[in-house]
Image (cartoon, rainbow, N blue to C red; front, side, top):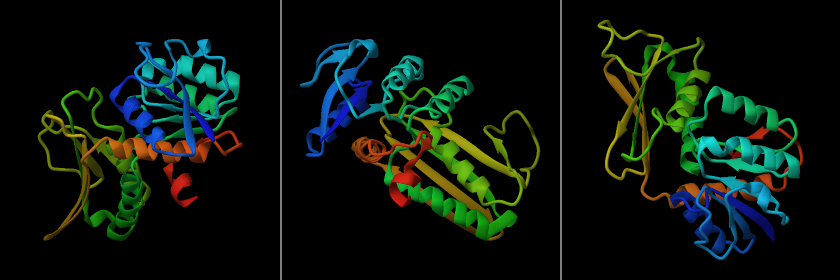
Length: 252
């Protein structure tokens, strides 16, 4: 039985992860961390990770970038693997994550769905095959409560496309400030916010007289929880300190 801690346990995604764990015979949630330490499930909740002295095998984090320093300090002190599902990290946060990965296994992905991680592979292959003759545009749509834009997933898809190109592209996030033709070395990234859209990502390869489109749509946040649980079961068994991602868990 894998003992799991949920960071951000009282948030919407934290509750989905708790439900996914209850349905999985290989997992048990032993504690939760949350800025609002109200007990909503059958495990204790702490506002400060250091308050929990019990044993655990892995942490799944669906909280906020502001919680990262304390969370990583706890994981490093306990030599505890962690699955980071939070988005919106700054360069300073990424430096903390890279430093922590020198001493503990860190699983990091801006999108925990299996479909998106398969899509990243397909986008890279398409960029390799189609080459510079096709313009690449990425459109992402999310609910009106999402704070960061563009989404971390959109950036992951842009990076996957860039890996398939011979040259380093320029990411363009808005075009209203410059009146000029689209550059051939651009990857356009557009963000839409509205309603309760859980998540939708579209990658467009536009060539002369033909267009190829890849699209992934999420209909429930349960798919993110399912991916996080799969990642937790994988990373809990890893001993080598480094950064892991869904490619390791799915294909690795």
